[in-house]
Length: 238
Image (cartoon, rainbow, N blue to C red; front, side, top):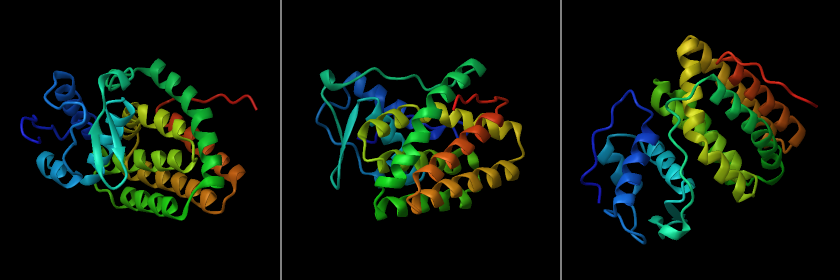
């Protein structure tokens, strides 16, 4: 099933490009409802990327309603009638789009952080640490760093215990990735890496402490910083 996929350009947002190729084959009927996707390992070899990138691509397909994942089994294509509207990949985002995105992220992700502080499990905390470690070790924020950053936020969504948070946050992941890339273009790489990791560590520490108020504050500070890095100032009304 991994045959017939095109080459992935290294300057593209890799998870989105991989998800797009699978989506195209699903819509064409090359991959049919009920079919199981290849393993993460097989897909990573086919596309020449890490399993982190593959996991993010599968998350995007899942939240586009094209596949479902079964714990310990894999990802399967869902029936057509079960699918929902697909969001675009966000490549043509402008400042107005960035504003709209942050207006959604502020209430969604701040509350998600608070709920994650209350409801997270020890394995989910370990996943947060692993994502943070991958961010710290990334040599190229175009690929591994962005994928690990998005994975960090998705794990928080999962840790809320509310599946809707996971669905919404995963659905906007590609657009968030473009915001990260836009910030990277405006600020020195070493500077943005240090700031971003510090912000994520503060979120992780508050979640680990099971302090929902601190987790919300840390996420709010991160979103404020993220917005400022693309020339935006967020307004809060509380």
